[in-house]
Length: 180
Image (cartoon, rainbow, N blue to C red):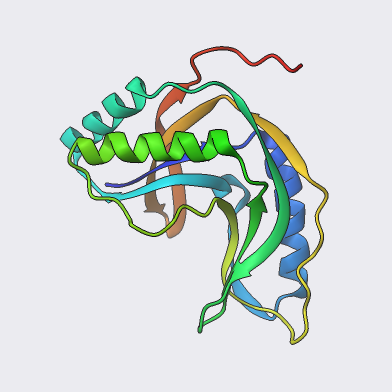
């Protein structure tokens, strides 16, 4: 099964991100845009693994400790691709997010997993193979803030011809969040 570790968003954050996606979609000439239910922040893409390996991933996640932290989605942009760009929403730099991702990566490597070597660039993918009109400028977005209190192990599969992400394990933060 195809697996990744992600941060999923509360419904109100998904709704706000979906509005930004829809505005891009209305301006686009072509492309494949993500569905509301697939909007997430990937911490680690794992790839194809079996049930036994999935249990090891759950164990690693279970041993990973983190405190709740706030992330801020604050800009739109794209990764340039020949067949159309991948549009995304980016995050304000966040040391807690980076530390969590690095800790998970190291623990997984120590458990025998081979991970991608490219630098972690946190973003929420809005769509792929997007072709925008010449001169289109990425929209300015009002910062979207929310508290991360859990991470999920996700399964990616096609169901009835549609890409579907299903949470199969969740790890909550070690303490509750108190806003100061």
